[in-house]
Image (cartoon, rainbow, N blue to C red; front, side, top):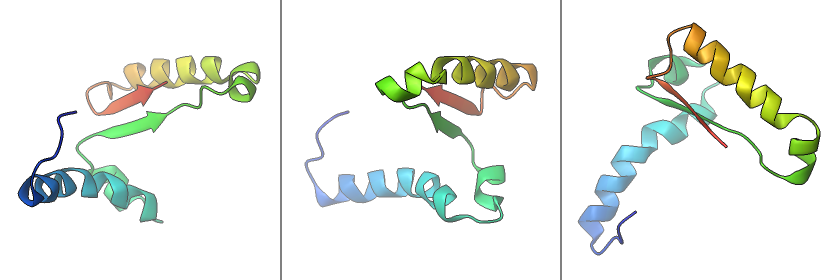
Length: 77
């Protein structure tokens, strides 16, 4: 990510990421349903990996692709 060198660039970045952050405050999932993209983050810590986190991520990715949501949902390991 390039370095932010002005207040205007910071405001532009804020406007870009703010809708993604509002998803976390949405109890009825309206922002989630209307979001242009969704990011699911998988823990890569030793405990999560040992508990089968990689398998859960593989199943998420399989289901996302099966439902045709690959363009909208991104799984980040």
